Length: 446
Ligand code: ADP
Image (cartoon, rainbow, N blue to C red; front, side, top):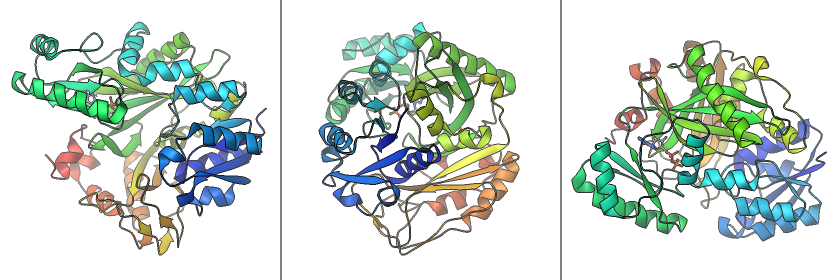
């Protein structure tokens, strides 16, 4: 059994993992950069180790530093959170070599899903519906043109190693395909050191719907319904909700079964998310994330299941604590990502939070690691917290969200709270009548 977990992350997710460990009687080690000495997880963890300077490449992404921290503290497993090393197969291989557990899937599964071309091929093999597109990598502009003509425009050029919406270019017609192809390749090479790209049909008005799965090493694979993450800005999620208003029980069970059958076929271990675009009643696989996701709390809210706890159970060889029949979805949940950014320009606003008061009360969960007097370092992403609202139905959830947003008191830095206040009264949003492009139109970006 795992006695001590090293949390290889920072911010709200480090605290989230610490909380689950404590509730299971497991000791925690927080690792931190020099810029994160005053982090909440560092204060609360049983032990902490400084693993390097502020720059993430020299601290949170440094495999030697993290392995050394495990050896020094005697941690027997690492929880990677999301981002940083969470989807790094080499990291998992090295932990294996050192006999340190990884709270997540096997290196092989991370490797397959981390390469979008391989992931798509695997998805097809496992019976998951995918977006129509090229059969693997597209190597030349000429090949891209032939494909574009057969599939019809618009098409999307995507980087095999892409992530965070980078390395993705739309070509609306033959005339801009050459440029989209070259730019996507150059961007991909610069950002990921890999210029392999592939082509997909560009879906015009899809929703982003993803299925949460959880699997143990005893052959059980369960799905926990979906999250609708269509509200995005620059391909980044801004607000997520569960369940999606466009799926009924039958559609949910059908796609859920496709995903759990696929996970059984793969022999997957741990939690994961199968991401789809959804248009005209059809699902199209785009990628699988082999880790805990930022928006996991909306699923926790409607299922009552602690996903981090399940991850730890699975990592220590136990069965999932529930079966598919035990999963019932109750009510509606919405998560707002609160960033330290100007709500109109989205320019980061690092600095010291003078006053901090978070909303509370029934159905209100605030996952954050900031406090009054905390200085947000400029070196990392600007997420400072997630407000997760749960209520009996969507209407009540929106009322509660409105009430909760009004309770925030954050002085000293700008936040994206005003964006959610502006969004709430909007008729389309209230009716959940949106697709992945809706938010950018609402923000005047399109
Ligand atoms: P990343 O790993 O960079 O986040 P994804 O493949 O998950 O890339 O896609 C991110 C977002 O880009 C999706 O949520 C969607 O908004 C948009 N997108 C991706 N593929 C397509 C497509 N074929 N058609 C239209 N939009 C797409």
